[in-house]
Length: 279
Ligand SMILES: Cc1ncc(COP(=O)(O)O)c(C=O)c1O
Image 1 (cartoon, rainbow, N blue to C red):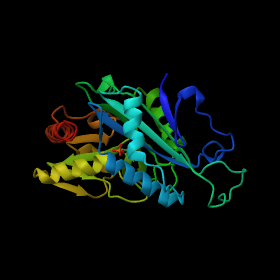
Image 2: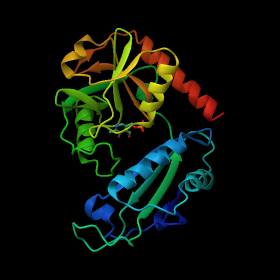
Image 3: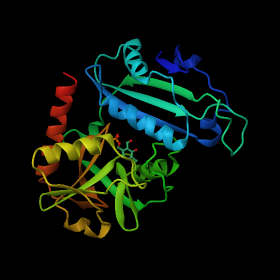
Image 4: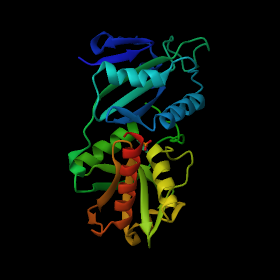
């Protein structure tokens, strides 16, 4: 059985018990991170922990003392994960009598972590993703990585029922991001993606891919991509920790051109970065 982390202790998964009055249960009041390890080494750990700290700060959850870097490393060793793995961390506002108002500041957040051997989606081996557009019905703080993921879950389920992998959220005519990923389009060799705002998650992979592109002379612009423009795009691709860089094969049933030089190059540069960082 997997060993998990809960509030300072490493426990068998079935002994990690949480009160039903945890705000994560009653309000979905928490934040999380989903991190990858390659060859047993956490990738971009500092960036993920910085985003978790930022999510906590935006949510006014006081996460002060938990040594999360150590938690991540120990979860990998406790579970014998020396190969490719995923690590999930979740922080909630803690246990408190049910009330919309925040509990007193001394309430300790609940901190949970787990890790498991991770294999990328085999559907993307040698192929791309199938995507469908849909209206963005999420709240206006999509920049916080909150555990309340109901619209994303509905979107992923709708995609599944349509034979697709990913829903792409359109708000005010702009393709903001996917249900589980950031979204990019390539027009005449230039990469474009929605600018950082309260309507998208500041993806760790997104930032790395933009940096890599710019370093290697691929023009990259953070500017809205309108749904009405997608018919003119030469390539579409998605980025996320589990996906890395994945081309879109079909959008709303329409096949994309089979040549993807830009997405292929960025995927290769990203793989090289992983190889360097997790040698
Ligand atoms: C809505 C959303 N956007 C973007 C991403 C990509 O973020 P990252 O590259 O940090 O994994 C995710 C990942 O879970 C996500 O859920």
